[in-house]
Every structure is written in structure tokens, then in C-alpha cells.
Image (cartoon, rainbow, N blue to C red; front, side, top):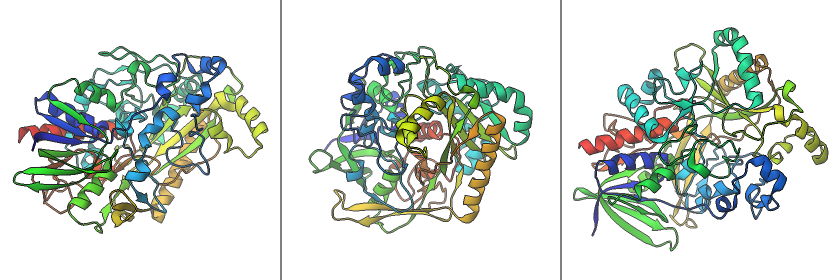
Length: 536
């Protein structure tokens, strides 16, 4: 029987950070992962920019829509609709092996190499001191961990009115990418309107992104091809698999894909890890001194409930409520766009009503081009031909405003396991997620304030779109931090209460979920869990 020092479950952002900290200490680490890889699409995508591809490439439909047109969604707007053919490997086989059922909650989960970090939006925000305290995270330690993670992945941003909400105190930040002309218009208008907007709690600025504008290590700066949703050429965008690729060059790191961890059992001072081979569907067993779970909050919940033999036990759930609104800057319609652009977030608009950074909402502003017009056309109440002509004219002035709201525990938001004989794991995750009237009213009122603020910035809200609960793809809080040993909770050290050698490095312990992009905080926490493990 081979006994590993550490087994890390999952290759996403948290697994990658925890594993890097452990490996750099000299520990022997085995990573167990679903490991689904991207297919042919990235390899056949040309190095040209998006406009050149549209003008010149005969086979562009293959990587823009998919050989089976899999990127053209059917039915109403839902979670993951924005995934392009090259990113769909992230969710491959998830519906089969990660069974989920709900009438009210529609999450995205991954068995892909790099997890959901293979396609995240790159937003990097530092939680404020008040937000960290509400989440149950150690303030001083997190502030230090934020800097370490930033140094590892590389972050670009700008010192402006949004800095306090984005990279805050972090050093070594690269310059922000060039702005889309329409975003530049909004940014300039903010300079003239900022006094009134800030009085109402709004702060606009450039987002902090895990996107290089200067060379770092073997990674190239952003090339402005506007193909970030389709490929990772040059590696300017940090993806979790980039770190895992580097770890695989180390002698003290092993990677095992096609592996779904299902449960664990502690015995004689070590941990027996049970898993399912995704290729053969045969059961496999591994052993380690310490187990680090980081496959994502919902998968961690499954593993813990099975391991505790408490399928019917209800675990709480946090998820940022999310809606988006296409907006129109009339002065920019009908204009030609430069070839050189980036499709990532252009601006961030934060709402901090009381100025304490305790209850902040966040809107990310995107301009629209490379995700193709068909995703917008079905929202236009016209025939296809007329809608296409209209949208072609309006497109340069379109801004997509995606609003995330903070989330506190409570109410009808929970999950548990149910038996399912048709599932490879013998069960499924049942989720209930319902906002109460007070929460819903607060969200509606806040989004009206956002629409009003955008009008001041010269952008008119067109239609509010609600993709459904779970569409923010921000999940947390299923095993809340607790230092009193309460069952189904996590000790502040990251140890799962009731165990000796099982640690959780994802967002399962967060007691509050700020609206700011949480990935940087997830990675900082994962590093801290690994660091504390090494001190034991």
C-alpha cells in the first residue's frame, strides 16, 4: 500500500493553489482529478484576431459554434450558456457523474482539467476587512495570502476609484488592458459625474484581472485578439491548469486523472480515499496521511455526506444572486470597432451604500463581439432577419452589465443527498434555493439603482435577464467555519470538524459570500489551509 503525504482532490483554482504550496515545501503530493481535457477546438483555432477569422476563415463554424453546433443553446437562458466549444470540456460528463436535481437551483460543475478555473472570468477582488470577518476568514493572514497568490498568477488593474474594491493593497499589479471605445466613453463620463455617483454609493473603475499585459515567466502579454473565450494562446490569462502543468514537472508531485473521489474513511492515523474510475467505472482506493478536499463546494458536500453516512442531513448553501442587463450607449451605435480588443470585463461598478464595504454589490461591464450575435438575437422581439440587421447596427454600443449581489446564510437554501440507483455513485444531490421576499425586494431595488447609475453614465438599460439561481457559479457555505467542533463544519484551520486528517480548501467554510469575484479569496484561503497543514 502506497501512503502519500497528501492527496489533493481537484485541479481547479483552489486545488492548484493548495498543491503548489504543499509541493514547494517538499511534501509528496498526489492530485486526484476528473481530468477531462479540451478536444480539437483549441488546436484548430487560428492565431488570427477575431475580425480576421470572421473575414477569412472558411471553417470558422467549427471552433465558434462547434462541430455539432453545441454552443447554440436551446430554450431559455440558463447557466453556462456562454460556454464556447473549446470550453465545454469543463462540463463534460458532469451531468452523468455529478447528478443533481432541483426545481430552483441550476449550478455549473466540472470534471475538467483545471476545473471551472479553465474558464473563469479572471476577476480578482480582495475582500474588505468587514467582508473577511463576516465570512469567517482571518484578516491579517488573508491579506498576506492575497499578495502571495497575486505574485503567482499575475494581476493587471488600475489605481482608480475601484481600487479599494479590487486589488486594494496588493503590489506588483500590471497596467490594465486597453479599453473598448464604448467602455472608454463610459469611463470618461464617470469622471464628470463621479461626485453625484459616489454620493449614492457607486464607484466605477477598471477591474483587476488575472490577465497579463506584460510578460511574466513563460507567459506572454495579452495580444488583443478578442479570442479569450476560445483559446489560451500565449497564456496571458491565468488558468488553473497552467499551475498544475508546472507542478507535474516536479518529482514530488503526481497527477491522476479520470478519477472521481466519492468518500473517505480515517483509519490508524491515515485516510483511505475511495474513488470511481471515470473510464472503467471501477472502484479504486488510495491512502494518505492528510486529505485536502478542493473539488468544488458541491462536490465536497457530496463527499462529506457520503463519508459521514448522513445522506439526509441538510447542509446550508450560499450563492450570489445574479442577473444581467444589456445596456445601450446610443452615441456609439453604428461605429466601426478596432480589430484589437479584449472580450474580458472592461469596467467594474461597485455599490457600497453605507461606505463600510460590508454589503457591496458588484457589476461587471462587458462589451460584446466575439461571443457572436446569436446569443443576443433571441432576446430581440423581432423576426431573425430584422433583428440581425438592427443588432448589427447597435452592437458597437451594447454593454452587458452583470450584477452580483452579496449573500448571507438563512432561509430555504440547502442541499442533501438522495438515493438514485441509476447514478454511477448511487445518489444525487438535491438542492433547494429560494430567496425570501425581503431578499428579492432588496435585489430588485438595487438593480433599479444600477440602471439609474448607468443612465448617468450614458448607457440605457434595455432588458433585465435572470438566468436562474446558480448562474453566478459562485457557491459556498455548505460547511460553515466553527471553532467549537460542531458537526458538518470546518475548523478555522481548514480541518473538517469530527476528523483528524481531512482538510477542506475550497469555499465550503465561508459564512458570508461577498458579491465581489470570489476566486482570488478562494485561492488565498486554499494557500492558508495548506500552509497551516505544513506547520502541524
